[in-house]
Amino acid sequence: MLIIKQIEQLGSVQACPVLLDETLAAQEHWQSNEQGVVILDSGILLASPAAWAQQLQSICNLHVLVAERYPSVEWGSAEIAIVRKFLADADAVRRDRIAQAQSTGDTQTMARQALLDIVVDAHRMRATDIHLRMTGSEARISYRIDGLLYHQASRSRTSVTEAVAAALNTQSDDFREVFDERHMSGASISLTLPDSGENIRIRTQKSPCRDGFSVTMRLQASEQQRVPDLYSLGFAPSRVLQLRHVMSQATGLLLISGPTGHGKTTTLAALNRLVPKSRKIISLEDPIEIIQPNIEQKFVPTDQDPYAFAHMIRSVLREDPDLVEVSEIRDMHTANAGISAALTGHLVVSTIHANDAIGIISRLLDLGLTATQLSQPGLFAGLLAQRLLPKLCVNCSKPVNHPQWGAVKEQSSSGCATCQLTGLQGRVAISELIVPNSHASKWIQDLNIVHWQESLRRNGWDSMAFNASELICQGVVDPRHAEELVPGMNELGLQQRQQKKVNYAAQLESV
Image 1 (cartoon, rainbow, N blue to C red):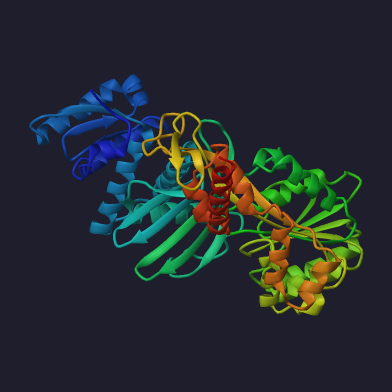
Image 2: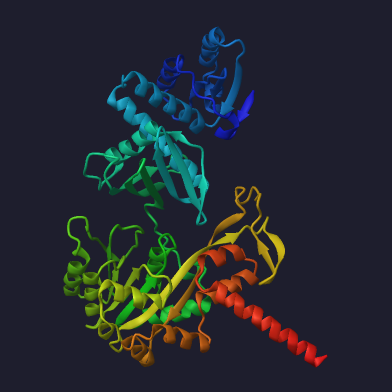
C-alpha cells in the first residue's frame, strides 16, 4: 500500500470525476471527520487511516467500481486533509462545469472543512500568517513561518474562495456584508482545532488585484491567558530594565515602531506586565488581538468613523485611567489626542509605523504635527523600535567564517526534522530605545534629526544594529537575515572592518 505524506508525492493527479458521487456518498454515510476516501484519475484508491481501519468492506466495494474503469488499481493511505483536498477541488470543478450546485448546507459544510484543513496545516507548521492569492483557476497558498514566506501546494480557486466566504458568513462575528472578491474588506473568523480543541482567531484582510484577489489571514490563539513577557520575546535584561523605568513614569508618550508583522502589538501587551496592579489601564484597539486579563480593552470601530481613536482617547480620560494604550497612531488627529493626554497627567503607549526609533519623530512630522509640538519638555517617555529576526535551528545551523563577522553560524539549506526542514526555529526580538532629554528637545525644535542621531552614536547608543550584531556573534541569527531586516547593519559592518584594520595595524607595530 502506498503511504502518502504530502500532496506533492502524487504529482498532478486529480480525483476521478466519474466516480466522485460514490466517494462523496461514502463520506456522507460514514459521518466521520476522520474517515474519507477518494478515487484518483491515476487508478489509486486513496483512503485515510481511520477509513482503512473501520470501513474496509465499503472500500472493497468501491474497489470493484474502480476496477471497471482502470486496468490496475492501487491502494493508498493518506491523512484525511489530503483526501478532503481532492474531494473539495473535484467537487468545485464539477460544479463549475455543469452549473449544478449541491444543497447550500452540504456546500457550506465542505467549504468550512476545507478552510479548517488549511488552518490546521498552517498551525502545525508554526505559521503566523496564511497568504491566499487567487489568479485564474488556481489559489496559490503561502505560509509565513519565522518571518519568511513559504509557498505551499496550489488549490482550486473555486474551493478556496468558497471556504473563505463560508467561514466569513458563518464563523465571523464582525463580517456584515455580502462576500464580494472585488471589494476590500476585513473581518475575524473563529475556528476550533479538531485535535487539541484550541480556539484560533483569524484576522482576515481581503483586497482585489489586477487578475483576481488576495486574502491575508493572521492566526492567533483567541484566548491568550498567558501574555508573553519581554524576556521570552528576546529583550535583553538591560533593555527590560530601561523599559520598566519608562513604564513606571506617570506621564509621557511611549511609541513603539517597526514594520507590520514584527511584534509591536505583542510588545505592547508584554509591557503591561511591568505596570503595577494599582494602576488602571485602558486599551483602545482595532482589532482586539491579544486578550489581557485585568485590562479594560475597548474595541474602536474605525470603519465608520476615521477619527474614532481621537474621540475615544478624549472620552476615556473621563474614566480616570493611569495608562492609556492605543493600538496604533495612524493619523494627525489620533496623534494630537495622544499628545494632549500625555501632557495632562497620563502615560500614553502606542505603536506607529517608522523605520527606527529616531524615525518616529519624522513620521509624526509627516502626519502633520509641528516641531514645536514635539519638542515640548517631558512629552516623550521613550521611543522604541524593534525587529523580529528568524532564529537559527540549534540542531542544523552551520558554522562559517564570515568575511565581516568572523566565526558565526548560518541557516542550513536543507534543515532537519526539528525545524521542519526550514533551518529556522522561532524569532527573537531586537530593539533600540531613546529616552529624550532636554538636549533632544532642542534637536527636535531645530529639526536637526540627523545630528541628534550622530550624537547618540558617538555616545555609545545601543542601536538595533548593535543588538543584532551581538546575536550574530552568538550564533543565534544568520548575518544575511540581520543585514536584510535591520537598518544600519551595513554602516556597523563598515565600522567593524575599519576597526579590524586598526587592530591589525597596531599588532604589526607592536611586532
